[in-house]
Amino acid sequence: MARAEAYEPTARTIPTRARDRAAYDQETVHAILDTGYVCHLGFVRDGSPVVLPTLYGRVGDRLYLHGSTGSRPLRMAGETPDAGLEVCVTVTHVDGLVLARSAFHHSINYRCVVVHGTAHQVTDPEEKKAALDALVDHVLPGRAADSRPGNAKELAATAVIRLDLREVSAKIRSGGPSDEPEDLALPYWSGVLPVAPVHGAPIAADDLAPGIPEPAYLSAR
Amino acid sequence: MARAEAYEPTARTIPTRARDRAAYDQETVHAILDTGYVCHLGFVRDGSPVVLPTLYGRVGDRLYLHGSTGSRPLRMAGETPDAGLEVCVTVTHVDGLVLARSAFHHSINYRCVVVHGTAHQVTDPEEKKAALDALVDHVLPGRAADSRPGNAKELAATAVIRLDLREVSAKIRSGGPSDEPEDLALPYWSGVLPVAPVHGAPIAADDLAPGIPEPAYLSAR
Image (cartoon, rainbow over all chains, first blue to last red):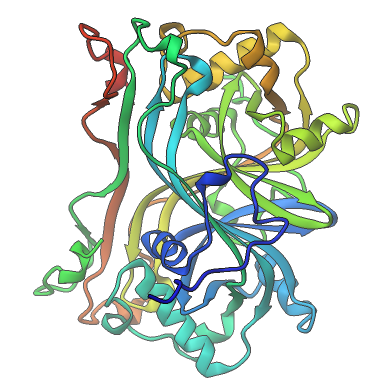
């Protein structure tokens, strides 16, 4: 069998510790990215780091982020079209709290992807439209086709940036606590408290027109 | 009644848009910080942004983060003790997916806190121990006292950094979709799909000593 496609590790995607938790194969990376829809976007402004939560969508080996044309990172990426904006995009899922006998070995089960690269503003109208559809469908598959598409004014007010998946790594911790052998008999409960995002019952808008059923894709997440 | 204590807004904590979503009062900020335990830590390395997920604890107006003494940001904060490491720490809770009739007005209900500042390594042994207890108790209140405390070797292998809460803002979006009046009659379901982290049943470690009951604090989260 052919070796699975993988991202090439680089100096900054090889962790300084717990290297056994790192993964670079596309399948793992894409699965983590597709499980979530909120990333933390990092960029440098006036020499200082800034981290903001924002939505993202994935199309193949590209991530798309969007925002108001007035938002700082979007504006910064557009001001220097060729250079773009250097960013770090991180997506994290928390899967459980790991309780060890020792305070030291407490941990979190998680899956995370870190993407380093340069974001460029998307100027091609077709790519921009497709990216915005991908953003909506990434959150709820099927929703883009079941809503009013953006009009010219809305598209003009929205900026989209693209980040190619090239310098990418995943990091995963799973399983139970790793206690020291001499601690195993200590009288402290030890194990994992699982955690996962769960959806509540949909809340229809107060002014929802009558006769519109809840769409099936609401239960897709 | 005295005005509630609040963080002073600065050029970088005043959003460029949706200013009505911003909050600076301590009560709101602390409540958002105390609801979570994973932050996204941003810093600049060789001129490039880096964003990593990590645990945090809060003691009054200080955040504590920890890691291996070998981890990059912890090491960087320790290399220049006086200067410290400039960071941005962001904590985000997703509360719901907001489905508008128009693709443009789709949104997310969320609560987030962004902290700008300089992190300094904690060198005082007592402050370090208290910070580590706070980190464990922040995730599960009561757990620090119900586990084996760190020994000298473990404390030496762990670095703690402190970030004072000074340049801080919260941003909150809640409620239903904000559609254009002319879109209200469109035949698209519209409303909010609530989302929240939920804990599963605790999974005891395979090698848990017999006769140890599940502690009550497991249901505190």
